[in-house]
Image (tube, rainbow, N blue to C red; front, side, top):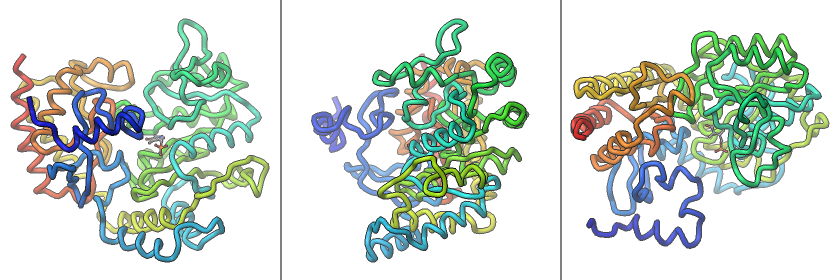
Length: 432
Ligand SMILES: *Cc1c(COP(=O)(O)O)cnc(C)c1O
């Protein structure tokens, strides 16, 4: 028996006061078992837990920390903002600056509204799409995550029924009846659905690179095809770029793949680690939001001075020339390195990557294109990999169904150390 760590003690204590001991389910390590390290601090590419163990971090707060933890410019910006007062409930110049920066960098966004989380952004974007089209139904894809709004907590019904069914207790059947769900990367299924259903679909919402079933890139033509079908049927296309925005490219997936959605949701990176979300898009649509239009949406802390300061500082850093090129080749080296180590140990796997976002599936399949294929992965092998790497001081996402993230602070030495650890762990995976 290992002695109790500080994290063990805190985790036990937390169970009494917080459901499952955590404030968001994935942090509880349910998929891999064991105690999650409680973090006391972080700097650059590393986090330190309450037992003073240091880890190279590939979670990056699930995406926001693209500049690395506690970047001095972000820290300074937030400290300055705090010293001027945390929140006013009245407009500030920084909000205008952040909106203008987002509009400058994301191709399809002409106007934008700031909110406090990705969940709020997607809920609001769907409300707007329903208002603008006068339709109620929504199409999403299996394995995509759009936050925890009721309308998104749906899964496909069985058989021929196209009505969604709730994927969580507490979600009214009536709410998700309007949510249709199809397999990711299956354009034919989308065409078939529209042929049967066309009048009622307000919006198609999609993660342009899926990052919540592991990292699953779009097949060539998938996003373009969605845009074409939507245009033909008067349906709005919503890119949920809460994860991919400022991650897979400076202008997000829409810039990378050259596809223009009607509406875009953002979050994670635009808050630089503070709670922010945003939704934006075509001016004629965004002008329907209150108070310029009738579609209601509001927020006491929206456009919060600390959050906008952190977001602006982060967007300023990632606007430097070469930022994305550096991330790209470093992540490429990391993923190719891990893949070749696994290969030389004859461990079947699929490694995926778009920019600095990556996934690893222990499957015999040749590709992973949707949720069913992601589900063919060997969970026991993944758990061994995950815990082996954690013991080596490498903190990976605690589930095969989550993407990993690199920051600009992950330099060559950090990647070398990660590959050394992978070498140690890979051969243990071959033992039955
Ligand atoms: C994280 C995420 C969300 C939800 O954002 P929160 O800030 O956690 O509410 C929505 N969509 C996608 C694609 C995400 O990755």
